[in-house]
Image (cartoon, rainbow, N blue to C red; front, side, top):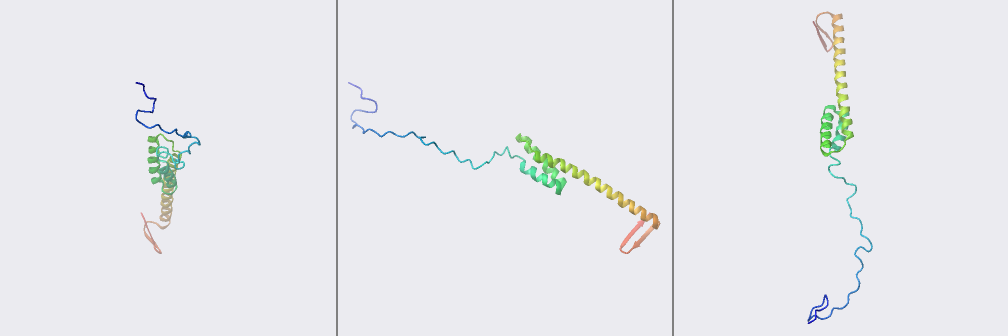
Length: 136
């Protein structure tokens, strides 16, 4: 008993020869669409918050300081540098310190002005139009 050639079994009709198939990647495949330059979440961790913190450093320094710190922590945990958050942090601190210095200067100038007026008017309560000044 002889063994049939591969692909043929006893009792089956002979199969017609098949046309040669072109290679599957004959023309090359198109690269998969990646949706643009979307980056992973780790690469943008804290970047948006850093931008908001930088903007708020000029408008509301205490809030800018807090947001910049949070942005730096998020970026640090993701292992990404966040220069904008660092700049926002520095500017927030500078503007807070300047605000404190300006407030102290204005209070000092105001106290000096009241002291000068009281030196001229003497002790007691003095009214000039709608302004009332009480001197010791």
